Image 1 (cartoon, rainbow, N blue to C red):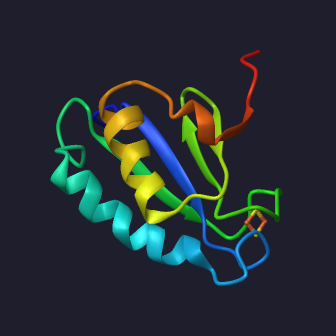
Image 2: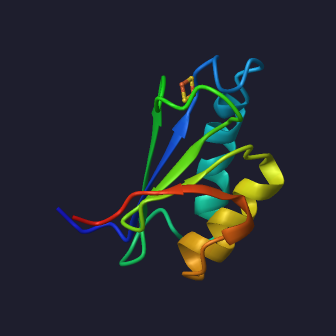
Length: 104
Ligand code: FES
């Protein structure tokens, strides 16, 4: 299997985002990754959706690995910044981070 540069998970559940904003974000993500050339090749990104990340407020919640960065309140505009600045540019969008997984 070809490696991935990042894994991005979007919560599409209805507790953190009562309007289920994660669903439209997940659909938007594919087009953003394609636009930025991140669907194929050495910098490709694996995307996924999950029904819950255990936060259940302040969503939609988006998680990016391998950095272990958790974003809250993700809007379409913020998702675009995450794709361009973090996934493509390698710079975490610090002002939207609410949690980090500490490496073991
Ligand atoms: S429903 Fe989104 S974190 Fe639980």
